[in-house]
Length: 157
Image (cartoon, rainbow, N blue to C red; front, top):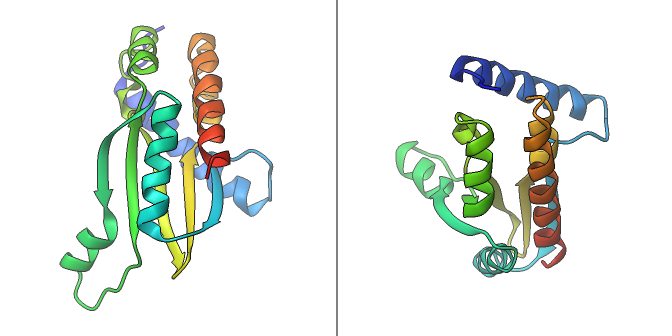
């Protein structure tokens, strides 16, 4: 089944609006997993990267949002906030074989953000719930595996 880029963008808009409704309604369906841990922001970032590697993922993008926004917005004082793009090459290749435009969802995102001086929150996308909206059973199977891997990453922290 081929899905056009505009269809995927519509699905993304639906996902984000559904996510807001789920949070407002305290629904158990979430589009992310999170864990708050004690520890220095940089230490936790290193642990997240190591846990991802243990689960077969590489960090292929890393965006320091605090640095970027603080340098561009006068009087901003954003706490450390990093976005990691994680990729498992085999999963990525397989999903692209089933849906050539799946790249709008890749790489999988994880957020690491400082809550206070010694507390950091780690948030990982939940591909299982995001892929359900595409209605492709082959993608669902892979998404379950990736979601399980991200849960394991969070448990290791």
